[in-house]
Image 1 (cartoon, helix red, strand yellow):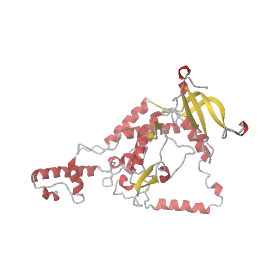
Image 2: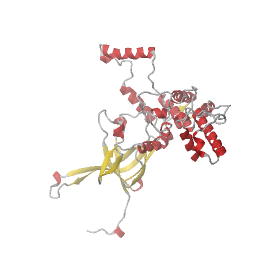
Image 3: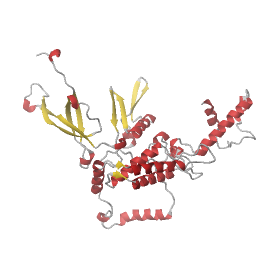
Image 4: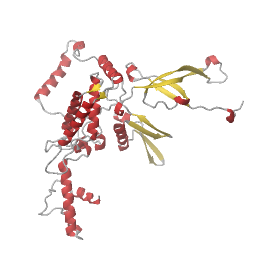
Length: 403
């Protein structure tokens, strides 16, 4: 029997693997996967990461390990022929702002295990797993900004959805947080990545007698408890909390009302006005469009927590309060006590940028006056200079002349 191409009819076929959703996976078990085959117009209907409801026919095909073996000893490969695909649970703004149930956890080195780096040593290649570094951080920029992940590897070029909330905890580089340094220098993460988080809080170990006493009493009570079963009687059961979050995420899709939209615009303008400085034309940056998008997502999440179908003004007020508290915690100038988001966006404060501009102007003026005597530029400021340079490295500002 031979195949005659001009007398055959060809149809599209796609192999799809589906996996159980986290909210139905029992604790301590891994999600089950099933292979499915889509034909003709059902090809490319769904994308990786979509929640779908599939109707199909469950089939099994014998796969013999040895052609001489009988059919009773052969293996059977099961799959599903898809008849219908229905996409469900579409998310607004491309993000799901809720906690995933039975989510998978991984440490830093394990999360970077997919990255492989090679190094040639004596004609041998030393392969190191988790060799990500800055390249790994750059991948997170797209995940946090567009909620997508682009892959171009092994001949596969595709874009995956990254509809998940990211909760990150970081320790300071020097084992203790230095309040005189910006947050980007304390936790050794690039400003472009930190600025993409909706809320950034600092949890500092401050000496407070009331808090220290409350913490000590709580830790001691864990050892003095006669009945361990009653220690968590006032806490919401984990089963109830899991069902609550799952229902709110899957069943509630709040819609933004006109009053809430006006309130969002008003709160964004108020946040922008906080950074106005009548003495300067530049001013401090206290809010950007990222804060506005964060406010929208937080407002919808707050309405979803209330099982509400509409986002009201109270949801916007709560979202604005969270953003103000987060900015006050992580983006406050230690010298002035004012909020400056450039501390997160660029790693520099307003007065540092102003000082850099003044010194650059002084350097340009000094070079114009010296002409060819550039050797005397090692003393950047003279008696008539108005820019303080004692605590600033001259070389750093000399490099800005190349711009």
